[in-house]
Length: 232
Image (cartoon, rainbow, N blue to C red; front, side, top):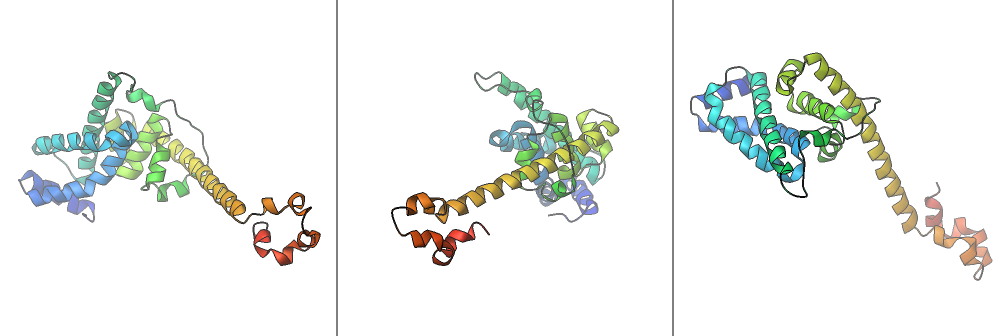
């Protein structure tokens, strides 16, 4: 993996001169985040295929590219976006599947704190939550935070103004933080439910103990420490 923008810039230049090792290094540096962006657009099942198509075009057109590492990431993202939208248009013509670039727009929006969202953006769980954002927010978040583009490059990729991309990314991160929090709360609730059920506490209530030993219910704390554990 290339360590910084200077190394990526040098690798791109070497790849343009026909260095196959340099092209492989560029691919390893850019592909994981580019694939995350493509997943945001087309979903998991088709992302690898679309990414392959994008890299075929990148390799074919590489000699036409001019610029540094950030410009390369933006250029690659534009190619990936175009291939993704072409794929969605083709998919929309298939019976019972449907889909185009508008299929992401019917997803939730709202807001609150963004800080924790950034740290988890490279996880599969968070990428699946990003797919729940409105399309403009999802793309802005992935391009700015995952792919690593600045606002200008992201705006060029999306055909929008930098200010609009900044706003969409800000709103998307806020909503993402909210979704992450809700997801964690749900996971904690499920874990608590599992622990509660496994220690048998609900089944040891007075109704079941009525025909047995009254003392075992009255002194349940001493006789069944596991039963009390879920309540502490």
